[in-house]
Image (cartoon, rainbow, N blue to C red; front, top):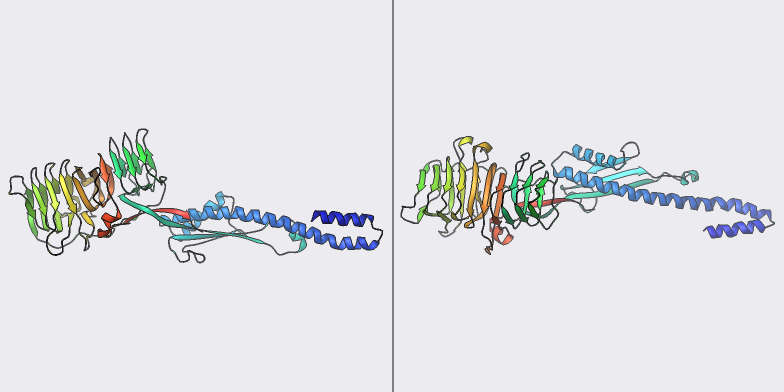
Length: 440
């Protein structure tokens, strides 16, 4: 274009005709107008790219706010603050609109997504002199909460330090992800020479602390300061029936005729399995009402299949008051093989503690070691669980979900969790691993 203008100027310079000057005077503003429009359009393109970066950042921030269950007003505020941090201050002709779920685009109507739209006036250095209408720069972005893998270990407490703890010399291999809902700077805690190998990741609402000699091995980037995981069994309550005690203060001794077969029902004032005892549990629901469920190191316990429709067991821990709710102690060396039920309200749950339990009133120990095989969920929503178990090299399809207020791994453990083992309990994907990501 400039070459053409230069040629015209040369012709005008050497022309003796006054008409050439008139012609030049008429055409010159057109050339200048096109040049000015091109310059402003370049600025608009650069502004668009800059504004898109602001929209992308604000959408991700808004999605994080959404993942924490915050209100629409809080989500909007989060997006505005992020925009301000990126030098976009909302007000006047500088606008922001946050919609969740999105109202347009590929993800319209999806409640776990949020769309952020920004507008601002374009810079007009030359086009304003030509009388052109004001240009508006628009950019929008959508971010969402996406499922990306599964967890099978979850600490529920939202404020406790070391809610998920690996310490001492514990060496833990978990065929799934681990998560902590605590906002603590030590939501997941590894210290001493503890080693954790988890697949796909470690996720915490707060931060993850790893001591100098501890080892954390995960194939995906760790997710500190992430969103919380949902409680998969929230709202589940203890059964009322049967009311009558089947047995009271039952102690299965090793000198009884073996094996000892137990029947489902309410066991008042605890159930204990002493050293040398060999116990079989018929399928059904076992309510431990008060005291504790205990198992000695040299005892054995198995849930058996019987009847035309064989199922597993659900061990329910409750009590006459919150302070008297039963706890569990399975000592090291115990040989235990239990499978959860495959139907009913406690489907997939092998141990369930009353949600009314008081944290300070009990620690639940599952320390059976390599001879402990639990298939199903272990759920203690208000108390601590200490766990050490699982067989190295076990090729049997496994399914263990460990969900508690606080979870502590105190020894060597192998947790197997896969779809082949969990599908019959409908536990596959029970605790989803989620990430916030830009999707559009």
